[in-house]
Image 1 (cartoon, protein in one colour):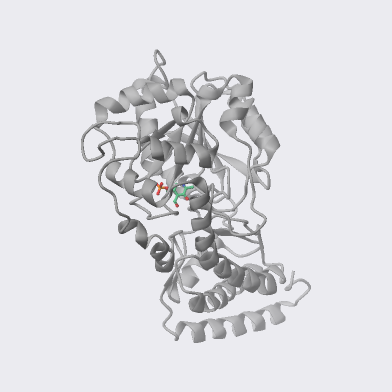
Image 2: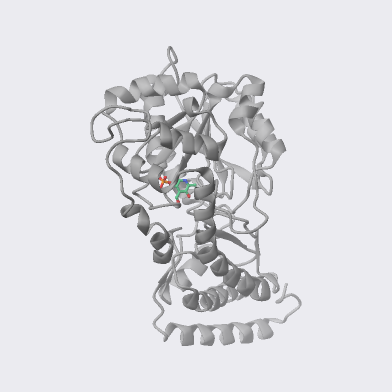
Length: 422
Ligand SMILES: Cc1ncc(COP(=O)(O)O)c(C=O)c1O
């Protein structure tokens, strides 16, 4: 590490220098927000034609999408996701504009009605615990916190969650009812689960018969490089172990077409999909089939989606490269951070070696750069090491990224030096 072996006086002088640089940056009046993984406006433009795609209200399969009916989604959308996810159309339920809503709603259904016909509602359990591979997605944790579940962090490894820990916990505690997973280009680390990890998920022997895996495949086609990651098909692996009822897969077009105005899907065993379709039938007359039709007209095949994602990638990847270069040549070379270079997804997740993540985020904010609040990637916002910082480089323009890199690096150096000087 760059500060190793330095005397107190030398460190103080370095801190003085960094503070001066920080004050100078502050005077520039920076106003940047990299706190959320949002597509840039140019990425949204790629899908602009979706709004002009002619549709006459009827699907190719002959469904009058202008009217009530077809609760589980039009065949064209089921077929599209079936091709993309390598899952049977009969194993897919098409939802509304947000997969997160499907996840929340699924947990609500398990609370009230149980995980299947005859299963006890989760609300009747004395205590419910949920495994939360961390760092993870803050909105997953917000859902389980909202329901009052006890969240147990599980360490993330480069191959996915620590499966020794998962197996030990799940098999020994019947109050553990579920686990959050982002198996591909995880939020925030960009890690994709190894084959062995997926197989071990399929082979879990939970103490709770109604333990469920929430497999949020949000970034399944969101590759950044020519050497994309791939993961095993969890539903197929679960079929091999006879545990296909234990997993629910989620995906959406939020970061393919329009966030908040796309199509979401949930996939599981035919038995689970039939059970949920019955319950959802009492809840709604159905989801927006006109939007399904629009998406089906715009994306006619999986190949269309993959080509479309290449256009996203052409906008996104240069931004990732700018940030990675700045980190590699600066903080990483100085030994002040570690990070995993993602092959896809929306984030770069940095772990500071010395610096306090809270202090870094505060310093950045005071100089005009909004980062995701420190601790957000952990249950209850408690990062045990106060070291993880999530960077979301997609929304801001390339021209602002060097400024972002400069300020972030300065803040990490200041916080690291402050730590060393006590
Ligand atoms: C892992 C993960 N799941 C789900 C979502 C949200 O998905 P949707 O827009 O389909 O609700 C996000 C958005 O950032 C995400 O990162």
